[in-house]
Length: 322
Image (cartoon, rainbow, N blue to C red; front, side, top):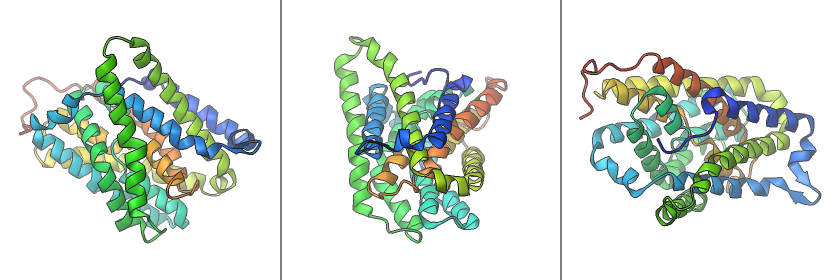
């Protein structure tokens, strides 16, 4: 197991985010600006740092492993970009959110799998190798797939700068992960403190990002909070359900289907937050991702605990992964 957010299964991460949100709602000025400095400019660098940390946990083998299990990875990627964007669009339309908030729901659905999915898969007793490879491959595909899905589905809500999205994903996600891969290669085993500290840095970074977004949208959030939380919960749950049953219908094993369900249900909400700020230039669009992040970690922890108590028995998994 490579990427472990400490205390994730104990809801420590969710608790830290909840504290950040409460503080941002009570004292929004503390998180929205420091004198003439606008804190929103911190969001993209923080996400780049988080993605660098993710890169240090990966290796080239995590990308090339697709050659050893092409069918499960293909099924997972198709479900990743075929379920969540359209479900997000359907929910945003059905709930009649204002355009900027609706675009945020579609945006979080159009992003690749989240970095926490590997941890949740590990806790659930799933196929960690498949999870890591799916996360790596969907992230690698995101510079194309995320702008395509946004143009197709969110274009009716807001103008979508296709090339701007693509370039920002490359700068914000692909380049930091590539640098993390290089750092992992060069420093492998030489600086263990880096790998130990980066998960804590990532947790703190995500909490700060959510606090900033909450502070910038406190009044708007008060009007749509309950509806948006409901949409996020439904979006996440539908991802689990369709990811699992879609994988089973396409003849993946029980263990692999559980892994795909987690990958589909957990999105890279941090990436969505960064894209909402730049190039979409809307803190309101970042609201759905800001809520989705902590929610998916809490729900994923519950799902992992449920499946952990129901392990797949050797020889009982009759459907093969191909």
